[in-house]
Length: 380
Image 1 (tube, one colour):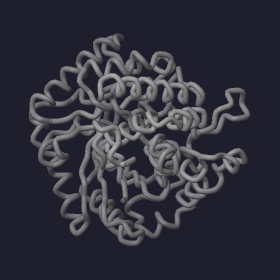
Image 2 (cartoon, rainbow, N blue to C red; image 1 turned 135 degrees about the horizontal axis):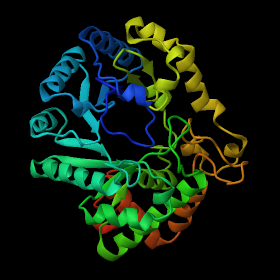
Image 3 (spheres, helix red, strand yellow; image 1 turned 180 degrees about the vertical axis):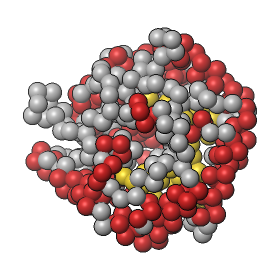
Image 4 (cartoon, one colour; image 1 turned 45 degrees about the horizontal axis):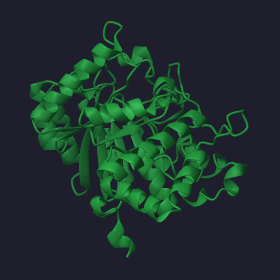
């Protein structure tokens, strides 16, 4: 599947401490023009055909896509559907949710499958200096979405505050009615302090895993997490996913409002001079030294010496290519979060542990197994 981050605008009225977009970019209210959208859709279509993708996931991204009116969003969606006719196209949207208005609800229902991905962070965003006020407003927008049959999928970027208190994070999502949440990582792009190192992030994943396993054993249900689920899938079934064994540098395409291109939304504003534009066409993109260079980084150069002897190398393949290995910098943790993977591996050594872990990935949608039987029917 080809995953496309399509950015109708980079404008955003929510200032986040960790944002990878520079402030001057977020303040630009410019929008993708019809001409640039046509060129972008032609590039997407040509790239999918050449590289064998029958499915295209289009994520309306930004900036803040809900800063646009519903009419504008419908127009962009209409062009996407017409321009990519013949492919299986799935449309999604990622938003802060703060600009959500009742007029947006029809678009979210009809074009985004009654789902919206939304970033929520416990200390990185404020209103009048208050993170509590921000979270209260965000929950009001969640309530508006839920009242109208729209599911909100929360995404958080944990600071050192959150990685130091995983039980609080897990409990917050559970108490507010979320059965899963996703996490992303700080990286070297963009501003922001309080960035957890690999060791702290690995410990955070390990604690989320333990909390969920205890919850599953006691109640039969838990709050799922994308990274924890992918780590279990990798350890138990050698399944690449999320931070482990991805092909994002080949299978991702990010398109800026001006047609600027990249394969990573975090890097796009920091490599603008090295990449072609959508107007340059598919040949320029496929032969771009920048794209080929990042594919090489992911597949070859990011694979370190310690990876060669690692028992998880077949599915991990060195982790996220923009996350540095910190094995030799004092923290002792790689970009694949080996200590967390070892913890998962040790846990599933017992029959009960394996049943609970199977239930987790089934409930998270990685396997078509009834989570409430703890995968027992598969083990018989």
